[in-house]
Amino acid sequence: MGTTKITVAIIALLAALGIASAASAKGGGPSVSGTCTAASASTLKAKSDDGRLEVEFEVDSNVVRQAWRVVLADNGSTFLKKTLKTKGPSGSFTARARPRDRAGADSIQATATNSATGESCSATLSV
Image 1 (cartoon, helix red, strand yellow):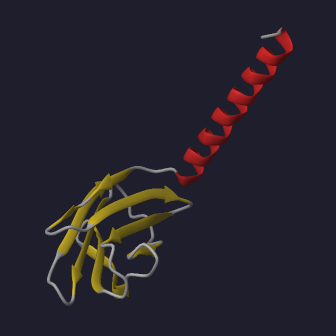
Image 2 (cartoon, rainbow, N blue to C red):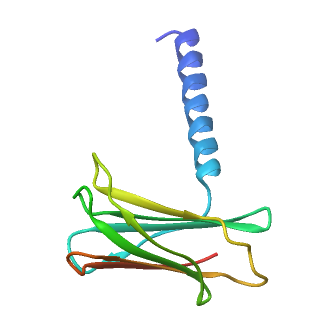
């Protein structure tokens, strides 16, 4: 392999790493896998941004049109309570909220309960 090809390969690799780092930084913030009482999976993400929190709680049951009751709280103070339905093709939903960022450490709690089956998913994340 010639020097030019090696140089091009190194530049391509560095560019790919830069793109991956930028995507990581953009998505940013810590995340944690939740626990579910049956076969579903859940993930909670949260980060501070300009005096607010960006919170996302995803539940994936692989079943379309299920209704789930979702509650998101910060240190026990509820900031989102609503029913969401899983959508195709993946059979998942994402609850998103931007509550104000309270002083001190934040402990985000997320719960979702399937209205039909009673399955529940939960996760807690410190920001």
